[in-house]
Length: 424
Ligand code: PA5
Image 1 (spheres, rainbow, N blue to C red):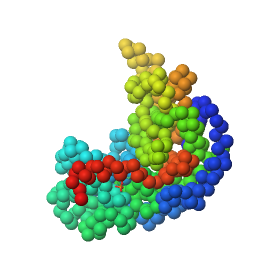
Image 2: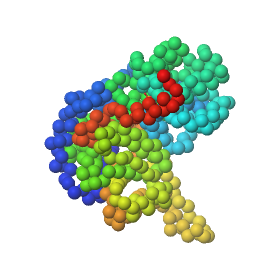
Image 3: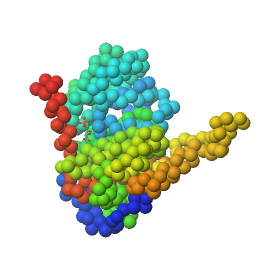
């Protein structure tokens, strides 16, 4: 499903030399003995997920699809990025769905809020508010505005059919509110943190409403769980990736740029940045995760990558079979001189761009390249990819003695903001 290739990174150490360290961490992950071990529920989630709740997701999704021209997904960070990454990766940016999805509650931008309210004014909408803590300000602010708009438009009774809450089993303000108002509720498990939660109702409900086969997502997740349930560095490609990152940081590369070659993979990169950035960037350690979408960004960042300061390595996510493809047409006149491509598929052109860029960056530019090859962008591969990156991330963090599951640094801006906002 996912093949990892480090042969273009010119690594100065041998990945297999890390075998004993990796074996120790593998044991820590599976025996749940490392820091933050209360948040390792994602490891065997493919086996242990709540099957009844999963069936309820499917039923609710069918009801929502009938009702909603617009699905509003209100959440931020881990309560937003995974669902959006999945929907865009699997369906592309302009899917032929009767329901359109809009993500909200992930910004304080007043312009965005006012425009969304205006956009949905004459449309039939359903709102899924997602917050594990139930107290995140961006989400709570948007939810209050939307709840009032929904009540004014549909009435309180109809809102029971139009507002769905995904939150903690007990904690936070959303759970009691949902109970009081009679909203449909889904649970974010105690032992799965935000950025690991796309495989729970957090991601699965929006995906299902958008018509994604979430059974296939769970099958991919399970296959990855089985494939990656080994400490053997010759077999576990997620761990090979983690070790390759570690070696590159030892060589002085403190920045990793995740490269995608399809516009509909951009949000996967955003999701990956949150996963690694929030998990690993602590105690003045970690690799800064950044991203670029090629060939678009070859016309901007490409210059720096090729000839700028040698601070970064690239991790390129390639896709074997594109979701959609077409043939480049022949033109009688050929005034643009493009006939040399007629009859070729656009995906082939994209792949040649990748090959040419790889050589330019690796050989001419001396930039190490790691390659993660996905078979396709299906729901199954998405599920597989989640487990792949989760395992790689946990391995990375534990190898440098970091708790992968907290985010103490995120609180600092909140404290300052609350003071300025006059919150008690
Ligand atoms: O990964 C995390 O835990 C965070 O990014 C959270 O998902 C994010 O802060 C949103 O939190 P909540 O779901 O509590 O609103």
